Figure 1 (spheres, one colour):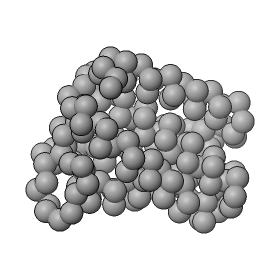
Figure 2 (figure 1 turned 180 degrees about the horizontal axis):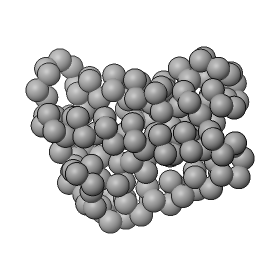
Figure 3 (figure 1 turned 120 degrees about the horizontal axis):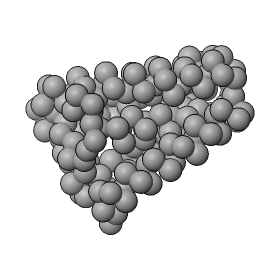
Figure 4 (figure 1 turned 30 degrees about the vertical axis):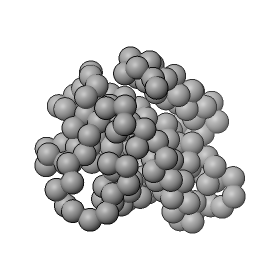
Length: 156
């Protein structure tokens, strides 16, 4: 299991690699849309669930309760998912494919974050959960990943 400090370093390296890849290979507008707009979308989504008391992060630094690693990780995952989706399709089908890929990645990694005590969920909404991760997290990843990927994918 990674320590919190090492986890943050890994996320930062992955984010830097994703950003460098985008800067070198994507149109500047698509890069700005995904990494700038995507970080803004991720910030708003995280802020909503944090303020509602449904999610608590245990790693700093944070801006208004939203840890920087979450913003970096979010955009890196959606970027990778969008790149893979664009290899096999285009347009809105690529947006949907990227959202599914990003949500699938989260479904594998989120239970690890919960088990490592990097974050915890409160099951206020009820319903099914998997390894401490509630159903609404996957629904949120699908919606927010699509919103994050759409502008960048459509600018390709």
